Image (cartoon, rainbow, N blue to C red):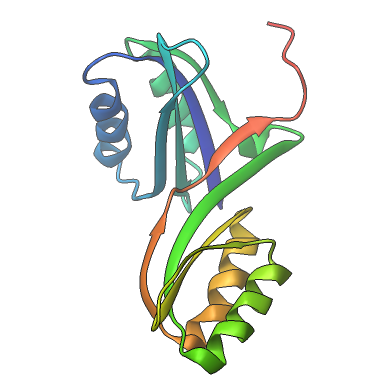
Length: 162
């Protein structure tokens, strides 16, 4: 099962290393990792996506909550409703014939062409992981030159009463 785990942390030196080390120390391979400050610059949100075939993510969440500088941890697989998105930038081969086809494919996914060159396009697409997989599948036949992905970011849909 895939888990998206979000940790609100103090924006301090070494916090990311401790969190990543906690996952690797327990044998988890991190699929995606995203870190960024929130509106209050004293804090950051770390979002980690891991696969768990052993049902041991619960123990990781408990351990994360005990780490210094960790304010709150959520495993979104335990949340009723949440929004998860990632951003992908793809540099894809595009001769004159393929360019219009690629622009059309991008439009189907509400993606944007952010750079045009004689031999390639750079396309930006955001969405949930399933949309990203479908998007990459549609443009792969044209020839992906390079790609960068942010990994998941996620927020719960409901407002917490905490």
